[in-house]
Length: 114
Length: 117
Image (cartoon, rainbow over all chains, first blue to last red; front, side, top):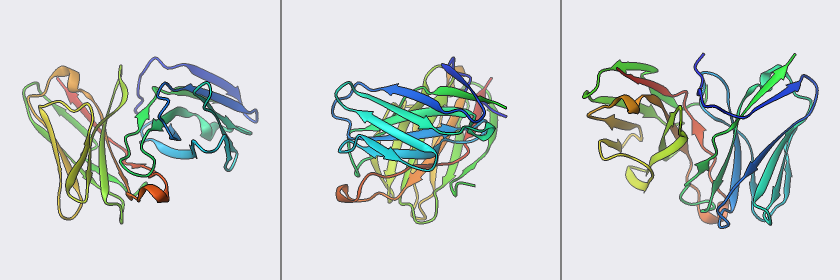
């Protein structure tokens, strides 16, 4: 399948273990953050989002933590399985709800080892 | 299937040529976005349309243009192609809500891979 081919940081995790992907942002006006994953040959897919008035949000097997003080967010994926192997992107926007000017990070390659 | 349809999936052309990439947004979505994903730049926002009108511009070259038609499908036109234009081009769509309703989740298509030789 197709791949982005970027020289991305790679996180290798054993199947069943938890994985944590970190993301730093620089725009202090950013008020909305979304995590996407991109599997080989596909477009980015929504994982979970968080607004700046929250510091934690949980979904199914995923938790996003936001620390606005240090402009850092993380994505925790519980009990990873091979289907979680993908490039994981964080994105930020400074226009909540309106003009969706998302800026994407380059991503982390997550490899789940069976 | 995300509901966003992009054609063609693959396109090989020569420098100096012009190509058109097409996108049909997910049913009910009024806003269309174009992104370029290249080897060294990651995912870069190009341009956004909402209900037929240009809404936001990103790092789109003057050689590139886009439009959204009354049926809400969109086309991205790339002209005077250069080797560096080789990339994956993604279309995404969203329902553009009001600021009070929260932000919009983008739904991406599978992309069009452009190779310029």
